[in-house]
Length: 425
Image (cartoon, rainbow, N blue to C red; front, side, top):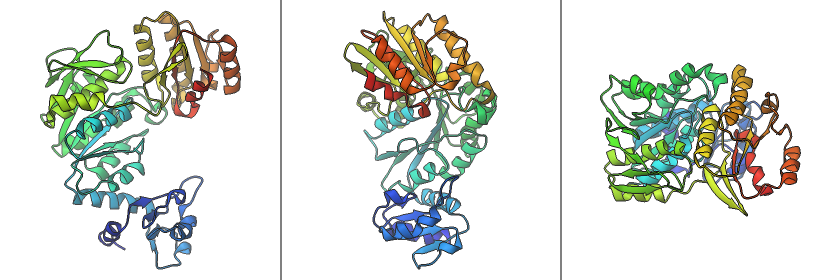
């Protein structure tokens, strides 16, 4: 079956599923394969549960009229997503970066939906499977779709752009994330910049942070761009950080905009959403409403009160750049009692031990004395701080010292599940 005919079937369906545990009636089931699973083996079960058809790529499972045999189920999913994208009048805003992608995506969505019919990537479905699923979820009446793109190797963003064909793009920053795959910070810059390369090649619109020297340099000869700045007036949108605010806040056109996000490191994320909203003709009142109604979730920059303690829970993910920013923010709060509880950072490759040691040393430099760590990488660092390789031992230690009347930063890579610590407070 060619893509045009498959698309006709897609329009008759009620969406896409790649997991038999989440089959919905009249959906199209795509049998994908991974290191530990083969969706082809579950095609019959998907049909039994009510799927309209199952797209498979192994002939031995092609035993009913409801199975559609293709050469590669994943590529077919990607091709179908691109075909759907081409039929839509929806404008696609794509974003990538080392830190803050998901928070920025949610802020942009919150601002845009005050004025336009808007959709966005669910959670962090931002890879070679997630981006096609996001595109295929876009309805014909949708005016804007905010599509997050993640990558840990070169050429991945380039490939995702070929599927999504974005009209607008934004890179949050270039940081020390996924060094194992990118090889170096220079590799990160090259990989993330594949989004800008696509947009420049197709004369599309770019939003960027004029305070970021690398981005300003990359875009120096490109004209279809809009910038913001938090430090000067040499940009299209000038924003002023609001000092002494409880949460991250900015002044935009004399409007004080208070977010529910903690930390100065979230100011660029807010600024990007304000800039995109402004350029897309959203009123200042609606921009303010969009920022101020967004409530962070999923362990991202959440401020929680727990008895006598204030907890900054930023445990969705971590890398050297984001942990350094979180530590700087904690120090700037000038609270009397602070506790830093950090989990290991992943995907740092040969730089792992050096980067974990740097974080430990940085806490000393900032005079953040109460550091506790979890994970084998931090355990190998040269320090006398309490460090544990197992959660149970960490839990016993925290229970024994009875932390009270403190501001507690909890951060670590997703696999460390640092949000488990909330039960202790």
